[in-house]
Length: 302
Image (tube, rainbow, N blue to C red; front, top):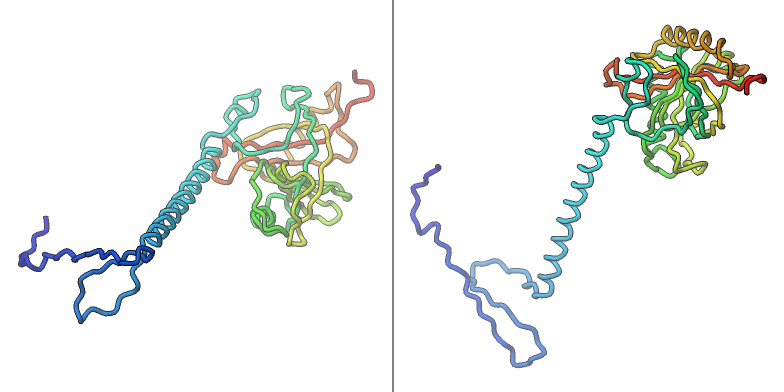
């Protein structure tokens, strides 16, 4: 406890004398008189009762609005955090897949047509992407990938003609393509694709489905918007970090397995597509990555 040796008179404040005089004219307002001394500086006009009530209401409304905004911010932050703390899982066939988890974000819509020991066949619904060409000669160079990701993220978060901030989706796609390469979408995933004739790669984000074809146009000319048509793909999932060597090994494994598929075959000119579902801080064994090849039904299949 803090003690102070002071005279009581220093802490004694006389209450102001307030008198209310009723004017003879009943239409005039009440007046409030307070005690003052000649040395007091001139004071502003006293607020009427109505003005006081209005000021109080405005102050309370402002405080409530500020509190509401803080609560909304906290609620939005909590909601986003929950999507990562309590992720969703795909149906798994192996222990490796059982440990994988993906954020609870919008993703590409697809229907599983059949499941094999190592891969599954999916029919993917059409979707839109935002695409950017990556610098460098490798699809998973950290520097090049970061630059492309930042360009696409800037478009997603407001660097567009309507300054609209769009929701994140999953996964991010990276794609190798033939010389006539295709464009990719934006949301999640991000796609990275290699252009053989230019020795370049392309990355793309899947766009939120609610916009359809009515997406805001990017301000950065290096970002392109396109639609990915309906397609059937063979998908092989794997965990860990994605490297060029790992992609080459998984692609070879998927192509070899598809050679023995009785119903589907790799579509001529199909390019490898890599989907990455998780943020960078995800542990390697919890990361879900997928390699996909577009396929078509064999003529002699039922």
